[in-house]
Length: 79
Image: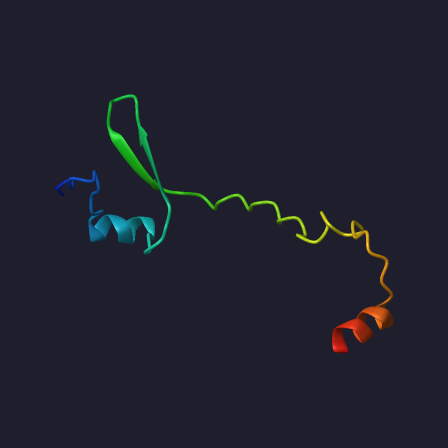
């Protein structure tokens, strides 16, 4: 099977190859070159999960300098 490379360096993987590898839109693929100089295309393994982002409030929790009591603050805000 032959395909053309676009000016952006992109190629279309032929449907029989996509079907054989179980590739769907958005699937990851890995390219490698073997010892014979041939390019090998393989379905990428699962991505490692990124660490859960830290709670954005943890960095500022306890850093307020104003010592308002809740009832005082509500009275001020509500008039």
